[in-house]
Length: 173
Image (cartoon, rainbow, N blue to C red; front, side):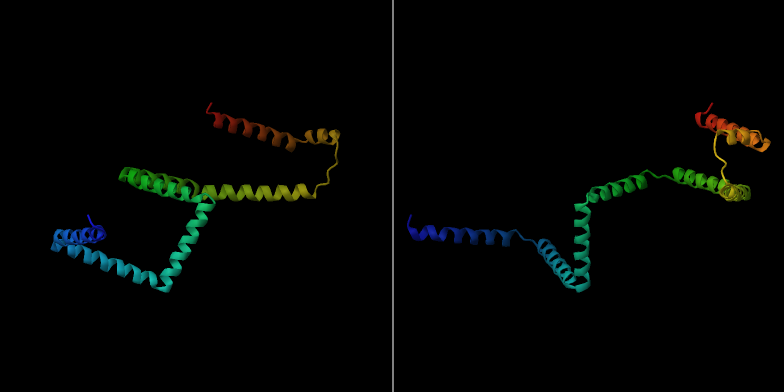
């Protein structure tokens, strides 16, 4: 082969490739290529918009920040969890959740609970104010003399009974 034929070989191959591509294209392929090209140009046009460009730059900065602190994996884990919860939720589960919330609202939101909370807060405020004004006498003998008062004995008995019942309720006995 001559040097001239070697230098033309790649050009001939390119021509053959162009010829094969031209022959392989059908009308539907040309249409899809034209639509894809138009969509790409439309996307580039939107990216040239200043507000869109600023938004994408902020998004990239925030994703980088999430990656740097290790929160990006957590974010995607939360997305997967939410997706799984959405997929797992059925009408029955939704009904039971609403029933549960309704029961909580009815239990906590009634007047008896509000009165109990108000009375407990008032008692705590009054006890704190009274205790703050009391001058401690100090010493073991002063504490023992306080135990001789009936209200102190009833208070201790109440606290011991309350604690026992609370513990029994916690252990399920």
